Image 1 (cartoon, rainbow, N blue to C red):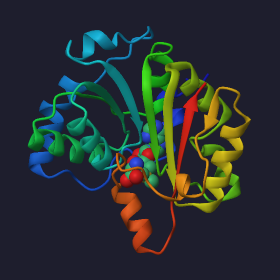
Image 2 (cartoon, rainbow, N blue to C red):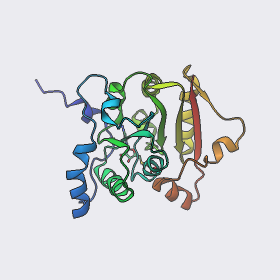
Image 3 (cartoon, protein in one colour):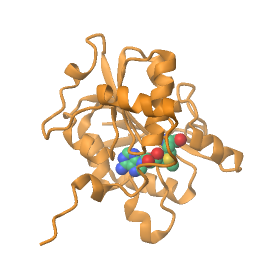
Length: 230
Ligand SMILES: C[S@@+](CC[C@H](N)C(=O)[O-])C[C@H]1O[C@@H](n2cnc3c(N)ncnc32)[C@H](O)[C@@H]1O
């Protein structure tokens, strides 16, 4: 009988590695990643034990890419513990460089797909979650790979506190409609848009990401959705 691949391998559709890391990046990954990585052992994660006692609330960023947004949020909210989730090692190395340069200490990492981390985070433990420019998987045969799904929305609803916020951005028209279609069916979230500028324009506390800059350079018009956990 063939053994089942580990669950992590079954969930992730994207790449784990790109071009070889530079020497400095390799050192950061060897020295800093083990120190900042969140151990998953099947039980609810003890966030208080992972972060300093000065931390007042916890946020999660899923698929942070090169970490521009996450590093900015961490630097600007030193009393928030930010959990970054990114399976692509080259992105993790880029974020580690930014954290080191700024001396940021309120970030912990999960260098794997977000789904398992979400399963192990305690219920109602986060006040904010970000999903910025998730892979659009544009071919309809691949749409089931999209991160936004009823299962992942329920998982995020479970770990967000009432009143918590879930921010999602995309530059992909189809995925934008897909996100709304899924989120508006959820009984656990309400869309915080009252006028078109509420989703056409980024909030001032929402810096751009690398992927977003490239999309805008190509003439695309991203959408920025904010949902409140009921
Ligand atoms: C299009 S990139 C956007 C990166 C970044 N948010 C930005 O805007 O620049 C999507 C990212 O999601 C990551 N990703 C894909 N599947 C994921 C999953 N299941 N959990 C967490 N991250 C994932 C990819 O590795 C990739 O870095």
